[in-house]
Amino acid sequence: MMRLDRMLGITLELMTKRRVTATELAARFEVSVRTVYRDIELINQAGIPVASFTGAEGGFELMDGFFLTKQHFSVDDFSLIYNLLKSMEGAIGSKFTTLLHKLGSLHPALLNGERDDKLIIDLSTAENEKPIIHPLFNAIHETKVVAFSYTSASGTSSERNVEPNRLYWEKGAWYLEGYCLLRRAKRFFRITRMAALQISEATFRPRDQPIEVSAAPVEEAFQGTEVHLRFDPAARQRVLEQFPSECIHQETHIDVKTIFYVREYALSVVLSYGSKVEIMKPDDLKQDLLKAIEDIQQLYRGK
Image 1 (cartoon, rainbow, N blue to C red):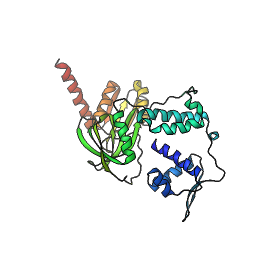
Image 2: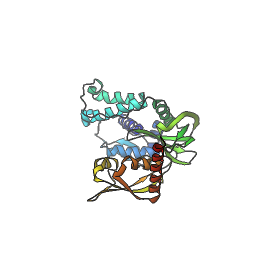
Image 3: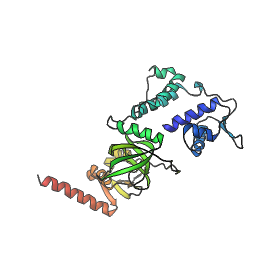
Image 4: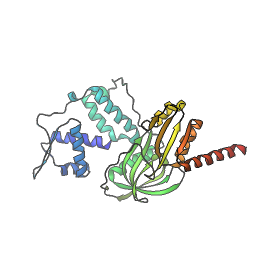
């Protein structure tokens, strides 16, 4: 969302000036020159023609004859963007209020509540998460190191110092992406597992790392366990929803080959399907499952 806000700001900057350099834009929006070039490329892909000029008097400017007006977007286009930012406002706070009013000024029906929206987007967060998300958002903007206690999916607790880079929303959960000074690598941290957040006065320079995009955020480690599961067709609908791009349909079963990054989560998934799933590989996960079943049996036998 910060990128969307920045790209709109860059576009408005180009509309008000004849030519502007990458260095000027980088200083204006407090990002690297490399980030500015990536943003300009995305703005071009969005259909707004930005011309680039090299040399001592080089820079960027909108191509002659181009004007951004509300005629370039339908009210439905604006409504989608508006509702997306509105839902983000509920999670982040008032950071997007100015941007919402900019969009609303182009189509007042958005601000006046005259739209009967057919698409509802909810990226909000629970009240107990806001005291963590709001300070994190500010720390990212101010490039300040953060410290917090973290409990992993397996229940292990540790103290972390992290250079925060981005907030990430995936399948109903918020994550922090940052450089962990303990692990000396990029990590994802689920917001609900963070506690005792502190924002230090120490600042950091963003590390020049390529942006990695994955299907889902991976906590703690990037190496996982390759798993082959075989499902009963009776569980087809749920399997398709949980593993949409990993299903291999056979006549008598559905095979899924995927990677689990947390062993406890893999076991919880298998257990949740009961007798409608069989672990084909790896063998050590089968043994872990049998041990988990024995522990459950022992629990109920003792009562």
